[in-house]
Amino acid sequence: MGVPIIIDCDPGHDDALAIMLAAGDPAVDLLAVTTVAGNQTLEKTTLNARRVCTVAGIRDVPIAAGCDRPLVEPLRVAGDVHGESGLDGPDFGAPEVDVVPEHAVELMYRILTEHPEPVTLVPTAPLTNVALLLTRYPDVVPRIREIVLMGGSTERGNTTPAAEFNVCVDPEAADIVFRSGVPLTMCGLNVTHQALATPDVVARFTGLDTPLGRTCAELMTFFGGTYRRLFGFRAPPLHDPVAVARVIDPEIVHCTEAHVAVELHGRHTRGATVVDLHGTLGRPANARVALTLDQDLFWDRLVAAVERLGRDRS
Ligand code: BDR
Ligand code: CA
Image (cartoon, rainbow, N blue to C red; front, side, top):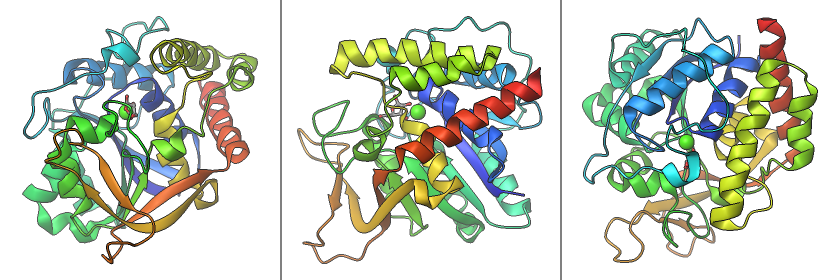
């Protein structure tokens, strides 16, 4: 069995690929998919998680809906990036998998306490659910092997000049997570911008010649359009699968240790991750911070996972 993980997500084009990587790669054992408000409302991100699991043939993984708004601020969605549905592009039929009747935080807590070994959490969305889990159930900490998250940046942001979306949407939650003492790996924009789904990559998904491969290509094509229009990117960065890839094989994502603080008060910088890469503050490191991506290994692994899931479906 692979490393047991729970993905906490807000699908989202790149979240969709993160779920597929986690479900299709034998190095991880996907125990649950939990959803939170972020890229779109909770209702939409949860529907999208069900759509992704349906289209990828993921039937045996529980899906649970979590928090519908950040801890303090009103919800800010990313309809400009992910579309009105949160997953614009492909035509999804009616989902064939449902959610379990349990709040995401309760499901996470139950799995963490019942699983025979500590479980890795992979949040790819605002950290509201995870912060709630840690504050409501502090006894769960030793049951968490690690938190490997997509969020933040060692450089600039994408939602404000200083702040990355997942941290910017719920900075208080991110602050709780970064100060929790749980072993933490941060995959920020500085590394996820190395995961560009170029036309060659999209062609590899189309070339799988499966409905799932084509769905992935359609997702990347829509995502590519918004990244070109909004940010002038030549290809869209698949942020969220980078965090899953780090769990699958640490050789794919190289990290350094550093102290990371979440800016909560800055007038222009609220939601920024202040990463002390050179140890100038003299504070002990609280995170492994991802710096470089082995792009060949990353894409090989992602394409193979989608191929595996697509083959199992047909
Ligand atoms: C993050 O924000 C979302 O739009 C993406 O799904 C990703 O998790 C990138 O800043
Ligand atoms: Ca996401």
